[in-house]
Length: 150
Image: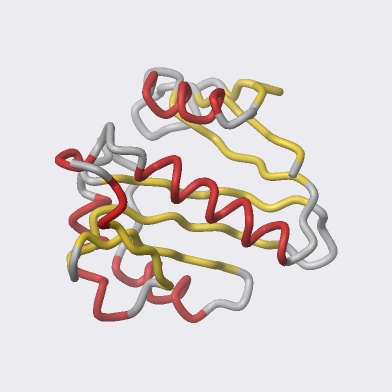
């Protein structure tokens, strides 16, 4: 299915059940409803959802730090049923533009070393590996730390 039927908007409290369902796709290290609610109201966070119709099928979460020229892409997730349709790339491009709009010069992220699809997405977008964090995730899997100049 083409992604031209996808719209992006700021996440809302009413999206919480869908965000929790998306998060449940992760093997662990999931955000709680309380964390989501906190990020929805935080001036240092930006959460977007990708919608097909009225249904959230993806989301991104950025963390900004005052006085820093870099931003952290904390989470980028697409529903399993919607993967491979360019939605992740669209959410990533949107997050990068939001970071530029706030004066950030660099975006950083962590990704599981066993998440080949996400690593490929980030590499296609120009992200480079700058470090590896052994045992980063709850199950002991390492994380690649990647960044891109904006």
